[in-house]
Length: 374
Image: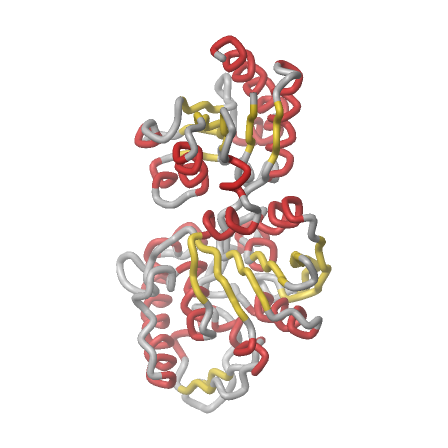
């Protein structure tokens, strides 16, 4: 029996590698004769670097940059085959990096993303994968562009700080100072959202509330984002606001489009990089999952992508997630069955503290069932 375990991280609790290894331990204890392979996955959000580095035998490069609140943070980017740098927005400007009482996208920044890219450029890298998931920001990528040499001025011809509140004060932009090495590079952006930059389905309206914005702040940010985008589109002669994914990571997708980056499905981009389909071919069972599965999972999230690959190659797919929420029944056509590791009522804190043990228990039960049915 050949089993592929390809989970996303259980965000805030267990990285994808640990999720996969825990499931593998459970399965090998119950079905010792099975051939079990762990392929940690990601879709551009938290855990992207860990998944890619583990699957490709890469390494990490430590770097100090500005965090989402512009305070110095020590983080890393991934390096593959001495050729490609993998940058993760979640570990530079991620929402969990901002204390709950300080979450306000008027004051968060993507400056550190640009600093990490510049560091990688200095090391000689000219191929990039940038994961956009999990951001705390809504600055339209202004911070990143500033770190890479762009200038944004207000009505008094003064430089603007690289935060969301500055969007509403942009009067003049200058991209002539952008690092020319960017345009010698290949930049692929991994995103699991298709939102445009502005409007009811845009970055601010859809994702601003979960980043801490109040209704009044949302209006200010939306007005500023439109102003900022018009300035840049007028300057470059390129219309990019409505490109799918421009609204990812609070408009960071839009800024990358200005740098001639290509936005790709995060799940597919990472899967191709780690040769997931090749490894699934010939498998009997494929197990995937995520921290919370709900109605949003069907819209390009990693578990469905993995299940579709399994179906393509005649393997049976199982979903094993931290929790299964209302709306998840829409996924039934993709999986043999859906499973949550929660076996009894638990608070969020209890569930997160006990994730590893709950996962082990549930995975062992699944393994016993598969053994009997095979």
